[in-house]
Image (cartoon, rainbow, N blue to C red; front, side, top):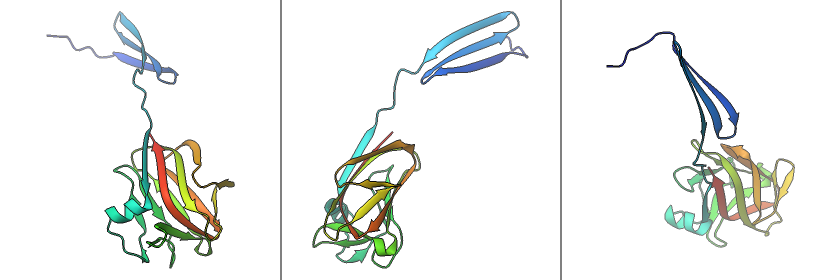
Amino acid sequence: MPETKTGASIEVTALAKGEATIKAVCDSFEATYDISVVDEILPVTVSETIKNVASNNKWEDSTKYNSFNLDENITVKCSSGTNTGKYYSKDLSWRLYSSEKGQLIISSEKKLIISVTITFLTTDSPTVKYGSNTVTSGSAVNFDPSSSITFDVTSGKLHLTAISVQYK
């Protein structure tokens, strides 16, 4: 049966991303191991059209919906307002209004979001911002990994028709 010793220590030193040294010391015994992480967490991309979101969730025309799940990790929600968050079957869009300070919030409790692509109609001349940057329909917006990303509708109405989120 192994003998238990008091006063033993383990020291872990982070070297670089995915690498570390582990040093174990007990009495006159010392062992040092260099380790590296072999499996990198690869990004996952989840994409959906508002048409499919509406169909899958049985959304009704001209009805307000505050949020939906893209998958088990990603939630998409909008800020409150009288009309912000309404679904319209006429153009298969989920609308957010600048007059109501509309915000589109993408979040995850377990994962880190690294990129978002929103696709929207240019009807009603929407201006969508991420921070101070203007967002173009269909173009990916990349950022440092985060659990929540917010887009602001600063003018017009956003007719969101699709969304794609990359996370890890």
